Image 1: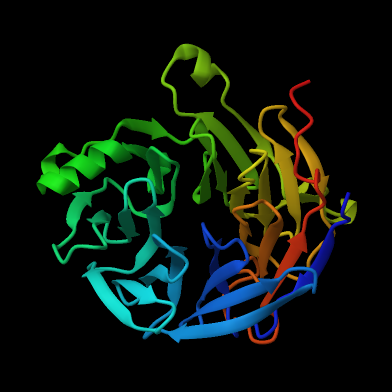
Image 2: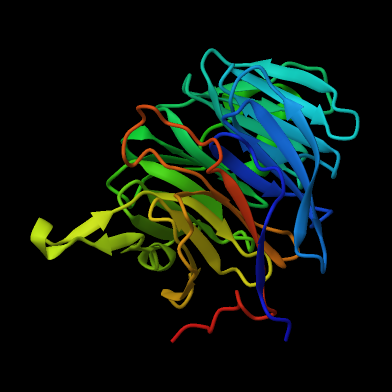
Length: 350
């Protein structure tokens, strides 16, 4: 079995990392979006323990999210400048697909249905067909979206006030084809299992459910199927906490859980927190598999490569100690961990 190794990407962003994502068809291509107004493209070199900067794509404002499109040379970004953009990674050409009335927080692309969805702080979703020049369909949301993720058949949108809407992608695809926004209603409306603000959402690769995390050091795991049996399986647990010194009153120091990502092969998932740690969890067995060495700063973003070989970890100072005089300069890093063959493999339920 190949031993696991860990290394840093060359030339990281100069400010906080907002998102990391690997290409769906080129597992060594990594996109990173940053508050420094750039998107970075890296190529991980197999066997060389290095990730080279291939290109960077400047935006007018901080980039809050990025995702790959239909192939390794297509990407989409969500900007603080309210724009949803398409980037041709080969030529660098940028095209504005739509404009919201406030910052765009998230973008997800569904390769199964060739749909791009953007979620904005203007309390709306834009549903795009990236290959068409038609304007997007707008869906109004009951709250401000903070996280969004797609599975093969569903999109999960987590909002303020513990609101979670789940949309059916085949239904969205047919509505987009007919141009009918009124036919797009949530497949399910749920209240989050977590009492505090949602920081991250990730969907299971087997399309069975999703995990959410909050600012209050907790993760919840839920299933899509709306049966009493499936809903009885959902659970939440505390994580990314540290014991406070006894001379300060004891108890827990609670950190936000900023990032979640599921392993594409084994279905286990990783979480990253403001405590600077990354943990691997077995969702079925309800247990932690391992916790990695502490990173120098808060873990802001995580992504597994599509073949499950690499875990990318975005590290930068968090806002846990306030935002005054904040600077990610010189402290923002991208770590890549090449996993051992069975490192992310669950043990199975007890």
